[in-house]
Length: 323
Image (cartoon, rainbow, N blue to C red; front, side, top):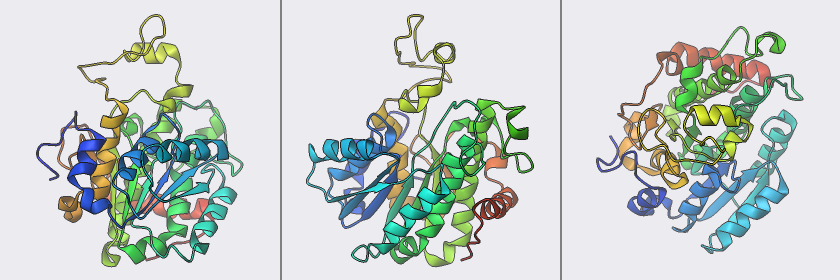
């Protein structure tokens, strides 16, 4: 169990202050550092406590420039920017090759796979994979494994930002592309990708236990960020996240109770830093706790499903990874 005083309202700042010693001398890579989102907020919270290096990864140079500028305002922390489009295996391989070529950076202590898309219309990537599954899972699967030697060198942690939306659906092992879009459902597609994030952590925990690498997945909470840019106003109104005029609202109670971005980044930071949860590798955290009351579907933590997903992912990327 992580700190007993942590919970729903815990902020990113509280977590990093508690575990400041765990930030020092660390090299930390975070994907999806879009301004206004959880990834950049997580990076900013860490930057205040001056890790050795923050590696910021995003799919456009303008996003990376904005992210670096925001952090420069609050910290002298050393940074590197990494261009990566997780929906393209070619881009992922190029990014991994760049990371592996950094001879002055022999290890990565913490990898936070935060980037993601949500509520996308039907579409396939250049590699022929449904967009949510490709970006949220397959891209991270490939990138993580390609830079794994540097994570192993640090006996590091791999964090997968999943979601309570894994309840929307399991991994469709026999039809991840929804019959080429003819039976497409955006919620189920997002749910599939978030279930995959959890199963990926389960696999990593088992496969890399002997190498000292830890893996966790988590539900950050419900937060109104740019991730919802493809979610219609009608859907957001139905969830109470916008009023009848389309203005953002804060839901303070019930199943759609919302967090701000600081609270939404807190569980990621617990997973990345808390030394008290090292014996719980493979776990799914919520509200800053390994043991929590957030709903969890067994299909997203099942070891046999995790193995099936690993094999399926290897086939999709055309490469095997054994540890």
